[in-house]
Length: 480
Image 1 (cartoon, one colour):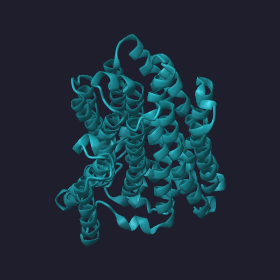
Image 2 (cartoon, helix red, strand yellow):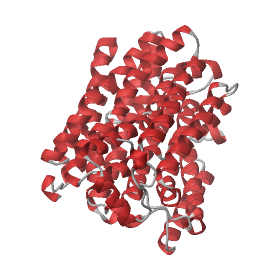
Image 3 (cartoon, rainbow, N blue to C red):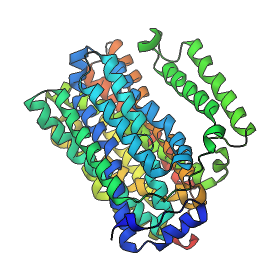
């Protein structure tokens, strides 16, 4: 059926009626279409992970510099997630998705042609700027289309595209690097972006959002600015050496510059009538727990995404193809597990998958720290696979409980807030891993021990997530 023949509606009630008119086949076709733009970020991330050892050599970058290269994407990505959610109320979800992909493609071109590290960071930042809204907007579509008892399966299916693309992406990037160089790898996210524009434009009909153009004048631009200042200053304080030359967590100017805008932001958002950060969402116990759990899950992911590629090159001297193959293992395991995790969450509640997932994270990080497994590629591959299984098991469970108590009319904003907190976790993981590893190497610790001790320290974040999972009281499928 041609979706474009369906009549658009612009009020919330008529939009809900629009969704209810969709057949099961039509609803799942939209889910499939949303998987294309949702594959952009994992494809871009795959390229950076495989190319990071070459970035280090090309630009003579330290581990902390590489962490900042990663954060140059992540910071605008997470800051703008809740912004996109609010802007969708003014221009529509579909338009924002298409515009975001276009900005992402511009950033990809800049990164591909970058002659200096700072230019590469600008390209990465534009990529993050453009892709920030793709995941929360897709989650909001799914929350509106499916009933509560079906969302776990739908979110699990949609979520599977990230690990699947992150699975094949490293191999493709590794092959391109082996044949040419790191610049050619940016063809992969470019092709993904172009395909996403075509699919979204053809498969998702306009008129499926509640558009309120007058909200431009009332939008909380002050709050956006305060949040951006806080995030930038906070991570500059956390990893200050590349910025000011002062050791991490010791530059009081950056510490003050992060605390002050945060305090003002919290005061401002509670004062105005239409804040872009809806702090009332955190009155929901399940939303608080899902947001914190997702952030803790991503902390260890941030650590491994930065250090595992460098570990493979430094310890095993692998070539591009072998590096890509090894980096496939974690997302492949995630891809195998993520849909099962969503189905299990629908059937048994989200608490049990989270317990198992965080327990696997703890076991893997401690094994990287002190077991003999990381001494061989086979043993390291086994650990990366275990880490991926745990990550995949938790993904849809966290998505599910994040939206369980949220009104359908507020789903887009909630998805943006949840995704924002989730990616704070990965940025913290990257920054802290870079700081700890650089500190060990500067102190003269042998590289293998520097890697191992850094990995072991991140078991603490997984342990905190495990403790949180025991506190989650998911009402289960009967909640619907």
